[in-house]
Length: 71
View (tube, helix red, strand yellow):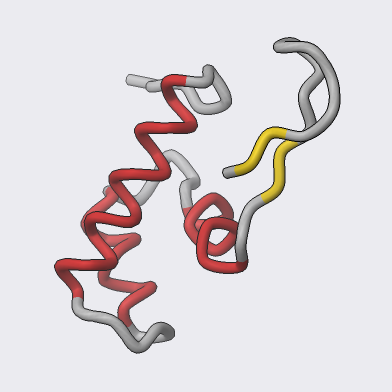
C-alpha cells in the first residue's frame, strides 16, 4: 500500500494487483485462511507465502482503519 497526496484523512492509496485481489476477497464471510487457499490457486507462490501476504495486508489495512473487525 502506498500513500498518495492528501492529509491523513484524505490520502489516496494504491495497491499492486495482489493486494487488490486480497482486498476484494475480504468479504466478512470467509476466513483469512480460506482467502489464502483460494488465492493460492491463482498465484504461483507457496500457500505459506500467500498466507503471510494476506495477514500482512489485512493487518496494515486494519491499523490504518480501512478495515474493521465485525462479530
